Length: 300
Image (cartoon, rainbow, N blue to C red; front, side):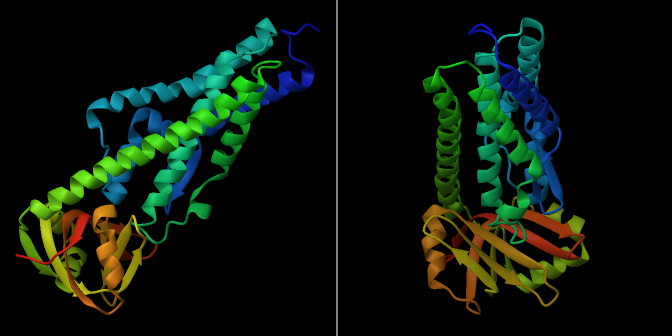
């Protein structure tokens, strides 16, 4: 056995890992309540359609959505890895390393994004949202990287650590830039509608389509009693609910999050934000009306 030929354990381990990544690519990595999201959804751009339709979170770079096609390299590079192992009977080197790195990087993005969605829907919990396919794909990707070369441990560590660090940094920077821009914009915009929270909920419950058409992407001031709030130093949400369980939820970003900490359940408050429309839950039989770019309203 030469140094360029993997032993049976590494060969068949890598083959199984490559097959696992290919299969998992088409299976749900996360599930946002009743919305399954696969790795393929990112490659096709459908990831943003799902996030916008269900949570009103749009692609921050819509003009570059075609770049997402690069994630088709994940299954493609796994096929190349299998060809190296079966036909050339050699280590797949850089090909399997890049396949594994892409899986790890994308997997972390799914986890970070899903964690952010908890602010929009309290039914989303990270531990239950992550699906077995993501765990399997991540494990398989590490196997691919570790079996890429007979030695070169420095490169192996690099291909494991670098995509995780890059994904975390990029996600944080994009989020921060979007937060700063949007919060400042809301403060300077004039509200088109002033509504009582219970009245607004009633409108959406009785005429969802018409209300979405009238209020979606409109700047509104909504007044009501706080039914639930969650606040940290960097993010916060505040809800106003009716007796049926339907509710309005406002998402506050870093610049405005601290102002929410002074409120308590039962307080009456006015909030200014951009309406993202409503989502109806077939399971809970309730409407959720979301607002983004929210700030505590203090002036006319």
